[in-house]
Length: 187
Image (cartoon, rainbow, N blue to C red; front, side, top):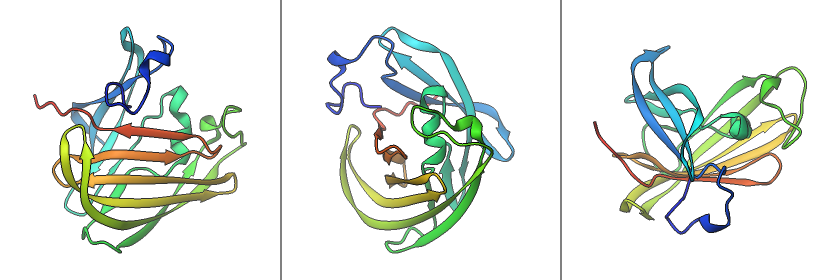
């Protein structure tokens, strides 16, 4: 999320609005994935809700679950942040995921039973990107997800040192969700 980066007018947000999401790496692993926790922040500080999930990061690929707290469940049907090696402009890959109806909502799209999302990814560019961390050389990844309930999209920028530094999602209802890496802290 963008608080303080000029991307969101935080003065117009309600105090309960989630303004920032942080990822905290946890000990252990989750089915071979790096185990992490999303912490959600409002104007008053950390929200009571948090979630734990997994990240895959190895020599072949980097893949992570986007935030999927109840107000962000729409992200379950968006393309997940995912990049594969070799990191080459023009590279393409696909995968699919079955998604249960516990992620459906009348706020964006309601469905019964499970749907199958089919994803198409491509590295569409490489070059400098202005970020809150400074100008970083990033691979641009474009992705589409298609299912019986519609199409979603993601444009992501991946830096080999910091990972995904910008994620721009187009949700199934046409709304958008933007995440920007604003800070990195090491233990």
